[in-house]
Amino acid sequence: MRQVFTGARVFDGATLHDGAALVIEGDRVAGIVPEGAAPGGAQVALAGGILSPGFLDLQVNGGGGVMLGDGPGSIPVMLAAHARLGSTGLMPTLITDTPEVTAAVLAEGVAAGRAGLPGFLGLHLEGPHLDPRRKGAHDAALIRPMDDADLARLCEAAGALPALMVTVAPESVTAEQIARLAGAGVIVSLGHSDCDCAQAKAAFAAGARCVTHLFNAMSPLGHRAPGLVGAALDSPGVMAGIIADGVHVAPEALRIALAARPGGLFVVTDAMAVARSQLTEFTHQGRRILRRDGRLTLPDGTLAGADVTLPGAVAHLVALGVAVETALAMATALPARLIGAADRGRLRPGARADLVHLAPDLTLAGVWQAGARLA
Image (cartoon, rainbow, N blue to C red):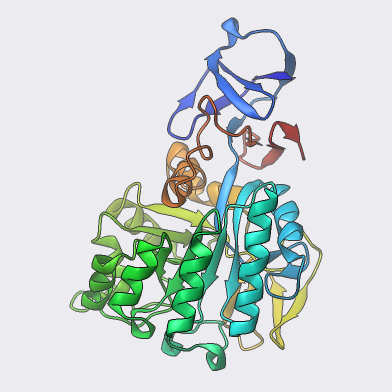
């Protein structure tokens, strides 16, 4: 079935088009044409705002009341919950856990990929090979160096998943292990690390090409000790996720990072089980996580994930003075580029017809996945 979307500005992943219509055929994009030249088909009239590619979230720990790793069946629950929040593609993310839980999640992810679950982009393993000094909300008792069995398991999984991202600290892996992971197709991301700038750049040289939630749980930027933050901002070939919720990163730091690395940052939610739920707290790995005033914390006040959606993150960026095209690309084309998802993140012929409609105030007004309206 052909659908023709009119009445909103169309963002194609890089540029905003005024007076344009988006044409989709079935579950794929057919093209963007002038409204006056739109072909016949089912007309979808939108009340202003912006029509964009569906948002892509590469760091999602939970949603719909569940956390990845809590047990089998969490992936489809998370995919469904976040799709209705505007993230039509996501990487379910496992927080540092035991080898047994990690193996079970990898197996569930491989099955999800083979089943073609809508919105499943692959998996992100955030740990357990981190630095306890920068553990954040991760359980220090579960953090450990990478061994040969871990390496083999990850390399095997990379060949069976649509994409696999692994967050590691240079202190817990070797350069050879990073190189082998990268060679197997793993997206190696540095995070939860107290490494210095030289250590970080050595890891980039070995094959790491991303940084996890920039600024948070890592050695900071100092004028004589640039740390992991400085290494990320001074490495043009490296991308970094960032949590734009007004809690994890101060506006000044966010603007500085964007100025230093235009086109090098993408937004993530770092969402937890509370996403698209009424939960005010939940328990994970035996620890309570509290939801209060837009924050998720352990009882001692340590931040434990974030309570934000990608449309909310885009709106926050725009409110800070970021161009709307830049903010939208950070939730669409840029994460798609990092994971090699050529048919996502842009509205071009042949791309998946995954769409979000943002109202003029940038709140979420509609979501389509494979051409079918979800919300």
